Image 1 (tube, rainbow, N blue to C red):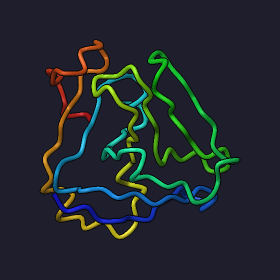
Image 2: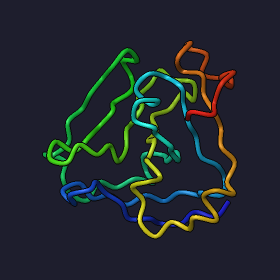
Image 3: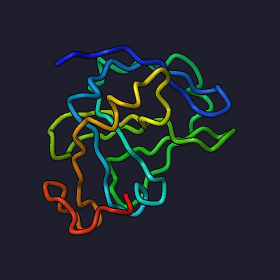
Image 4: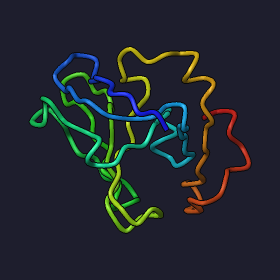
Length: 136
């Protein structure tokens, strides 16, 4: 596992963060209603590997049907740079899902070569791959 520190943020630059992640270890896509509508393609980070540098006051926390998922977005530009998932969840620990499209300096070849795990959040079957993933 080779973690790299990426900077990232929202479109307008109000929200800035750093995250230590290993893109080659894999990314994720979910078919739940919010992830599908946002077209969220994420990489997971532990809380110790994520640092919010600026813009905490610009973040709005939207919580949908899953009460432990905090879908954060910039109140100025509307971009969803990351979210955090509290416990209880399938991992047993808090984690961050970081939108790969909000990471700066990401190697596109590495990103498209990385394995993608699909989650069936739509049916609350988080350990299962959805039957249809082409639209994710």
